[in-house]
Length: 301
Ligand SMILES: Nc1ncnc2c1ncn2[C@@H]1O[C@H](COP(=O)(O)OP(=O)(O)OP(=O)(O)O)[C@@H](O)[C@H]1O
Ligand SMILES: [Mg+2]
Image (tube, rainbow, N blue to C red; front, side, top):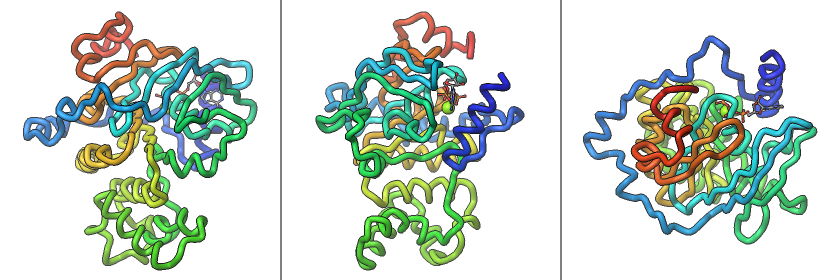
């Protein structure tokens, strides 16, 4: 247990995010959006596309932290312009899996990935993959909003400046990204003030805008609402529903209502194995595997 929490601290430090305290609950999200669902705002069953192209085809992935294996023979297609939710009990490998997709685990010494994740005819895990370019194409949003201690504008412009884009282009993209993240109206008059002055929910939308600025194709979100209040959660969920028209989204969530509100497909992980992946309605209403049924009916985890 102590080793595990050290490991977590280590991972968190790599990404400059604070690990969850033992006292913090992850199940802190009331079913606020049930009302929204009744109003028809969220209904992924209407946009489910079971024949959507595979954006990233994960095949037989094994993952190791040194000698410790954390993922076992995971295969799943991540469908283009659909939301795939990853659920499962703490420690089952959801974050590890998400990080294999944009090679964020490379930052942890002694890790090793086997198998394939085919993206645009290349294998993400290949040593030859340009990880800087990969992370532009596959952006990531973390559990806790982690804006840089810079202005709102500079946060969103950051990646574009690294790319050496022109001032004009940067200004246009910053506005488009903030609009895309449903934040523009709230910040357009204070772009040069510190991002740290924003509320938690606004900071998370800023982080989404920062990811959108470099025009990714895939967005990875690791429990993006777990540090947010119910209203901010609702906004992020609305945003996900909107963004998926243009992007492929993979979201880790501990909140099963959230998975059913926003995702088209759900994968259930247990002890490093993908037990089952299917359209979200099927996972929640007719799971094929007993383990899935036990988990969604709250018998463990
Ligand atoms: N840096 C690390 N070094 C060694 N083991 C690690 C490291 N990070 C995670 N692990 C281990 O890998 C396994 C999967 O962890 P992971 O963080 O992927 O789980 P998770 O499903 O995201 O859990 P949670 O729901 O608590 O976020 C766990 O046993 C964990 O202790
Ligand atoms: Mg995790």
